Length: 89
Image 1 (tube, rainbow, N blue to C red):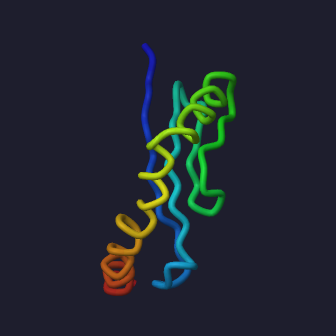
Image 2 (image 1 turned 90 degrees about the horizontal axis):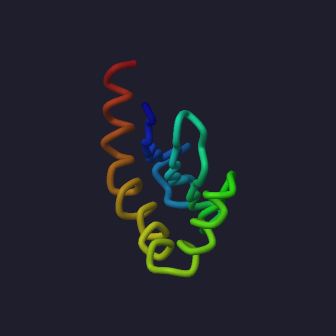
């Protein structure tokens, strides 16, 4: 069978917004074909299919909504993540 999945990730060194990177990666059969990175600010395709989607998504509303995810998703939760990690160390 075929497997399609999306991995959303927040990487951070501190709770400051500038120190946070939001990524959203799309995979098909373990091969990453497209990724949004907040440090790049747009989608980047890694396969022929990914490149076509990146071009289309970068010219549509998808890229605008992804740019807001760093603050909406990562920044709001980074304090909880840090607290959870510190209590377990």
